[in-house]
Amino acid sequence: MLGAATPQLWLPTPPAYAQIFGSNPSIITPPAVASPTPAVVTPSPANGPSAAPSAPRVVRAQSVDLSALIRVLIRRPDGSVDASSMTITGDGEFALSDGNGEQVLKVSARRQVVVGREGDAFWAQDGDKRRAGLTGPIRVNGTGDGAPLRNQSTSAAEPTPFRGTLEITASPDGAVALVNVLALEDYLYGVVTKELPASFGAEPLKAQAVAARTYALARRDMAPHKNQSADICDTQHCQVFGSITGEHVAGRAAVDGTRSQVLYAGGALFAPFYSSACGGHTEAASKVFGGGGVTTDEDAVADGDVPGGLGSDDGALKFYKGSWDSNCTGSNKYRWSVTWDATQLKSLVAAGIQRFKGSQTVASSAPDARVEELENVTVPDRGPSGRALAVRFDSPGASWTVKPDWGIRNFLRTPSGELLPSAAIAFEIERGSDLKITSLTAYGAGFGHGSGMCQWGTKGLAARGLAFDGILNHYYPSAERKQGPTA
Image (cartoon, rainbow, N blue to C red):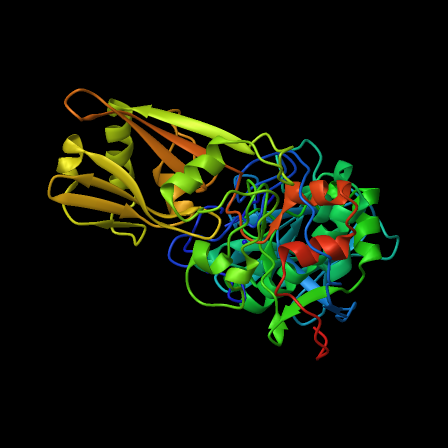
């Protein structure tokens, strides 16, 4: 989400997706939002302020059970969800127990233990000492000195330290996965400043903490990683978790300052999408990701000064080509443009058709051979923010229509092969004397899917004096407090 990045209550189900805010139903999950530096889907912050909303209504939040545990899938350094074995160590003495709760190994500090599977049974090896035929999952805990457990979850030289318990679980095809089981609030310590820079200040970080807490609980209900016995993963596919090394004193303060607060709407957890920079107007999640859900058009929010007529090509072009008094103008992706010449455009369309062949992302009326005769590119549908909800390519007797959001960004890759920063785009077409397309320019705004909270916008709103509850009220106008059972 700030990204990333990345995500849904309705929260769209990722189809073996690589990592996308991420972050969608037929296409891919939202980056849940992005990371501290622009990235997608994710997304990640990219820069900040502007536009005061109307008088803020206090965002109403409900307390949740602080003893609730969250199960976080720790992806491998290459992004995969599992491996043939896992290597665990600890800064202090630690012990391994099996699925029956019986201790199988006690290990001194800094020694490495390897855990894997043979069929349905697990094995654990400490040097030349091996225990096999174990019932899973295998749980690893420190023996009381408080020293963290570690695993090589990133490409960093030092293995990553973790709070809580490390659990080696069964994954499909005989593989094993690593799951960090810890208290929800401890988990959030490792999320907030991975999704939003500490430099954004206390109120934006508090808003991020409430959104991240609600999102984590929603993902737990949705169980996107049930094959690994996890609730959520540590990347933009869900939301970024940096464990102990990702914590910052400002992030911990934001979590503690909003302790147990989550957002509700219509009697259920609210879907708190967020992305790096909305470009001046957020979009309703239902428009971006399709399907039903608790979000409505009310959640498409003008995030500063906007011209009228954003649903038209002329209105969207005016908005995206100009600079306005928006809350996220500090983002280096607030405004951007990409140009393709005729050859690049035809190659882009042909590659996109091939890449999404057999998927629901591209609706095709004819074989891709007619791409050479491409004669027009249009946006047949826009959301309240002006975002393209579909992009259509026309050749004589043939057309190809690309669906939102990630589909558009992935199909319309830049000449250098990168995904478009967002689907908030409007086109200008140059034609030769024969009326054939000579170039296509996309003028765009923002970074990420643009639904829910604009992470760069939180910085702008805080600069205008809004506290975290006002920020949340601005970006999630349909969220409300409802008393009910704890999580």
